[in-house]
Length: 278
Image (cartoon, rainbow, N blue to C red; front, top):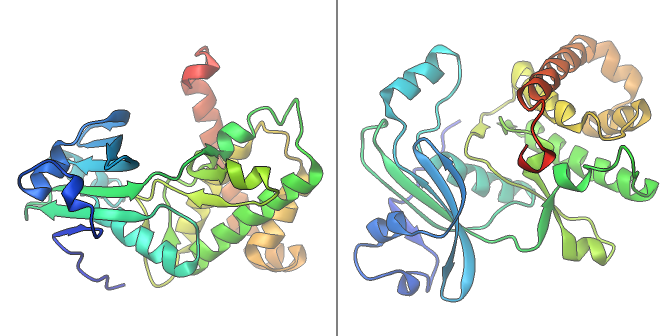
């Protein structure tokens, strides 16, 4: 799928005046704030500009070693903020709630050293579904609320996948519930962390399997039962269960097998660690 080339530098109207003096790209790359994630070649921070909170994701280049490591393992390397820029725009077109981009820039032709940034509005008072459902095993939510959440996530996943997008980090931790809207009896869920998302004309069975296995694994141990999963599956595929298992039985067996392996790996990795730092 051919994607439009993003601008080398773009800032929402009126935002540039809130940046420090100097070259807008360099000043954006030098911004510092509350650190949320510090990965090799990438930082994510909450910052304040003009009295308003934003998130900035800065990419500093991953190096050829990381690029070849990904390519040799069959993964598409993340080279900068451009991937997330395209993903946000596409999700907006599809009506999937997500972040709102207010700034983007990239500089350099060498993919191993290219620098870039993505600036987004702060989503406000949100909670990930991973955290929201943490105590469901011992303190189940109201049935109506659980079914609404399952239906909303299923609809988001169907829209994403049926339009050729693979999230590649499709865990409950990246679905964020709007808390003020929930208090008013409304369900609004944002899909975030799109920096690995791929966009293609049609999603492959393998890509669908990997995303759904990640989502399934992250839902384990949260008090969901077989009826919940089957209700979700029927909504996600928009077909009867008989049709789904007749045509895609092999796919969903693969999903279950991979999800079990991911969950076991997670449990082993964090065994013995306090819940607060998992």
